[in-house]
Amino acid sequence: MMTGTHTGHTVTVRELAPFYGKRQVTRPISVEFAPRRITAMIGPSGCGKSTVLRCLNRMHESIPGARVSGSVLLDGENVYDSRLDATLVRRKIGMVFQQPIALRTRSIYENIAVGLRLNGLRAQAELDARVEASLRASALWDEVKDKLGQPGTALSGGQQQRLSIARAIAVEPDVLLLDEPCSALDPIATAKIEELLLDLRDRYTIVIVTHNMQQAARVSDSTVVFLVERTGDTQQPIGLLIEHSPTREVFTSPKDPRTEEYISGRIG
Image (cartoon, rainbow, N blue to C red):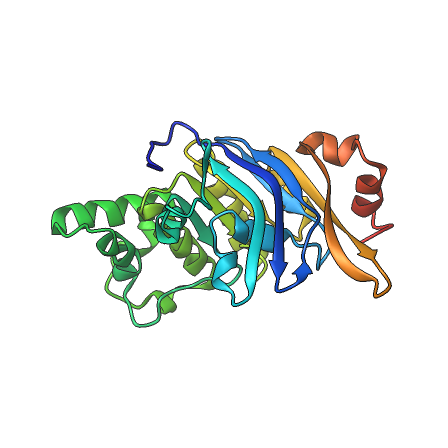
């Protein structure tokens, strides 16, 4: 159940609608995230793109009062099946957050090893090998190999974000989700993260939420565009998925005229 290798894993979203209590965050969404591709989700603040991202690995339900309707399928299996443990889902669909997370009381080595130990890995030689492999895959090994015992918080913001990615991929997920991973980083660190994502694309299904349309254009194969509409007497905002197309098409010949209006800054 929920097993596989890095041969490519498809995430299919069907009529997904997130809620906070009674408030519906988006209109029901149906979209497919292709294996070994980077899909960017863009849209104005408040359109629900980060909430939708958190629904993909059941992080949304960790918020009190939050729930979803609809389904999220990983290779055809509904991750919201009541028989599935949310922890297992989150191991198969890893997530990197907006702010770099270096576990403050742990060394660089232990930042990676902690998740492996939680998954039952105990042999020191294998731990060492997996930590090194993850740091190499996140393009961080050469920078930290001589200071693995130092706190993760001693690293720069960009290095901490690559450490977060290393920690996420150490447990060998099928899918990697990133929620505005470069918003707190300078241009040089951002370029390193983008280069890393392009390297990782051959192994993972990657979904990235970004407020930076140039970043979406640089790194993604396809782009999902959200907007906000206001409904009812209260003009309550609700997110709306208006387009999912190859990135080049989104930025040069979008199907929906509202996409062009958003990208050009006329709406948003």
